[in-house]
Image 1 (cartoon, rainbow, N blue to C red):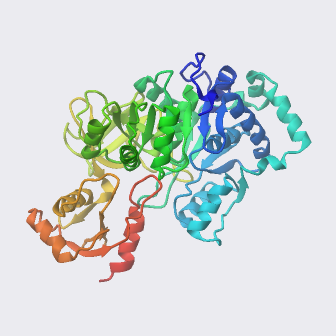
Image 2: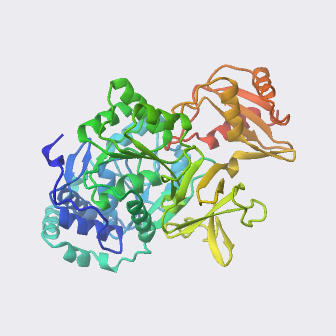
Image 3: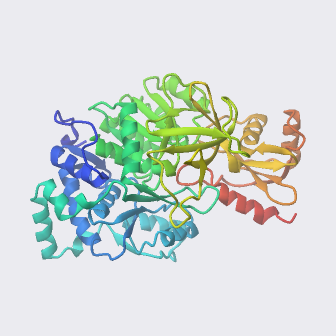
Amino acid sequence: MHKRWNYSKKRRLGLRDGRTVLEKFLKLCSEMTSDACCWDEQLGVLSYEDMRKAITALSLKVSEYPEKNIGIMMPSSAGAYIAYFAVLLAGKVPVMINWSQGLREMEACIELSHVKHILTSKQLVEHLRQIHGDGIEYPALLIYMETIRKHFTLWDKIRIAFYLSLPYTWVIRLFNISGQNKEDCAVILFTSGTEKLPKGVPLTHANLIANQEACLKFFNPLETDIMMSFLPPFHAYGFNCCALFPILAGLPVVFSYNPLQPKKIVELIDATHATFLGGTPIFFDYILKTAKKQGSSLSSLRLAVIGGDAFKDSLRNGVQKDFPHIVPYQGYGTTECSPVITINNEKSPKIESCVGIPIDGMDVMVVSEETYVPVSSGEVGVILIRGTSLFSGYLGNDPTCGFVRLGGELWYVTGDLGCLDNEGQLFLKGRLSRFVKIGSEMISLQALESLLIEGFGLPEDPGSIPLVVCGIPGERVKLCLFTTFSTDLNEVNDILKNLKTSSIMKISYQHQVESIPMLGTGKPDYRALNSLALSLFQGD
């Protein structure tokens, strides 16, 4: 690792003053100058001054594009955040494009956000062509980050040198950053599209900063901490918690562009002495298994914050057994909440359903699914959220869509089911959309999957999803089981019968697939599976 990566005594952690994300970052750059900001697989070590130079140069090109919203389609990398800050400096809105989705979903996101130009990487686009074929077309002009410098004129270079010679306070005035408001849009992200087409989520500077301030207070990082970042920036958790937040707080960030390369991530943790990482359970499991295989103890890693899916007891036990120096936290959040809502603390029960207490500025309420009246402690209902990190409405939609007014205030309806205990600890019980009504009973598809995994004697492995159950709508909902192994309906239903489940828990269809389709976030693509179930069995 380059000597510039070494710890600096002048590094001071904390968010700087400023109404916007950009203002805070420029002030940080003026203080930290030659200190390491991040490490990137292609660019190596970048100081805060290196970042400021790249951002200033790129912003001049971005300012030439007439539209307000500019797309960014990049993996986890320094380039993604150079592009992000450059778009803000140009007075425009960054739109993070999810390149791991299908083409239909990607096109829908681009059209919904009125994006005409996308800052991207030639390497990434080539990778996508290998997946989707050479005929892939984007409804926007691709601007390659690798070649953009070739288009700088002599006049551009003179202007860049001039801006870089100025104190950051002058830059703020010249670029009218001081005229930007904390309630202005700081980024447009998209929901995962697990069950429906993705929805656009505009988040303000105030939303992002409130979430960062609460996380900073909760974790109280050390000046020697280093963040390992591998989640893609189109993922709300990857975008804010794993990269933007540590960058703005003065923590060095190590970028690895592919979460599906755990060997490289393990090597980077050891080489850079990374102490902190955020990830989904499936990617965290890959990393731990690979480290064990390679004989790495991940000795520098002290904190792991897991979100995006249930932190299985088997994974927690594996951490305690093989990597006892790593303290795992489980969090809960949504794109709409910037994203963190709750994090477990030392008082939280160490079970997979417990996701802890709300962070500062966020409130959680659990209500009856039918009446929207608050339920008693321990009673399961729909989770509602309000707070400083919460967005104000979906892109292009009625602003009240997704909200309910209770007691004169708007609460966001998450669509998740859960309960609160007497201590205010939140326990997740599943997605409302992952329940189906058969007869008069509500059936949890997630609970049914757990029963089948137990019945088949399959190991509880967070890194592997062997089966998924879908509901096929009709006069009576029928259940379809997708498996990655060979079985048949008789065996499946015999297992359920032997487990003494309700007689209405009967699988009507079974289909073997090579692998369960996954989203870039590490979650099963339920929408793709629902579509496959409909195409295979609807009308039978």
